[in-house]
Image (cartoon, rainbow, N blue to C red):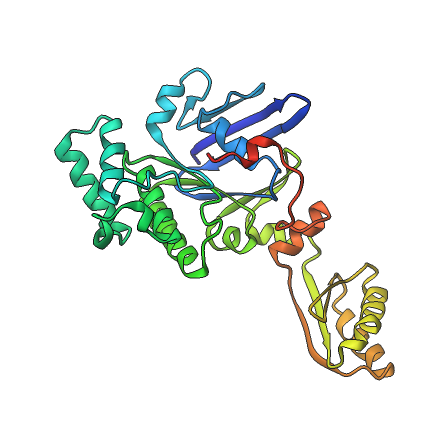
Length: 323
């Protein structure tokens, strides 16, 4: 197996704050690799180091076989980067934005114009090619931003929370674009705090928290870490939630979660479901929904870190800075 990105022991400090505390990564060529974690976990800092925008205080990393510290120019020739916020020039048209990037990359006028037209068609922006970017919707600006990162035909693409703030339709459109890129051989490093996004796109995921990789594997491998199955119970009467919590917690031997009158708890014993049903029946609690299912990535993250991935946590200034 070949690896497009390798990182060993990456450490980056900002004053007294340690943003990266020894990050190790190995990203197979031609795949989507997800960096999953909340705000401030170190995802953006990792991307900036790998994209040669920051230098690590300790550790070693290569992209496309080139050392990010010794050969940053070679690395930059191989990569594309889309940050958390669209970085297009709003006063320029869609075509002008891509022409500008093409010329900066050294393309001739004709080649830059042909590449811009190709990307605008691929990203379904050709009808808006002559309009100023400030007239674009959020999803259109995001697509234009991603198109700009592909002008140079990168072998490795860094997507730093690319769907932040997008509506579900625009998010799904970007997901399809990412899948097509990987089908063409591009390696994608995707950072996200959206569990569904990581589950949908990434073949392998590294869970990052407080500057460290705390777990890594395929989505299914990570889900297995929580104990395999989750019992979910919703009583007919919301007033019975407290009884359900007590019964489910006693049977499972752990504290359940409650969301919108649904009680969920990880279980290892397949006999937990009938045991809960019997006890609730004895207590006179009518059940509207009852299910035993596999764990979700959200539950994986909660199990690993003690908080959900969507929860905001204190961040350093860099994690808030557009990439």
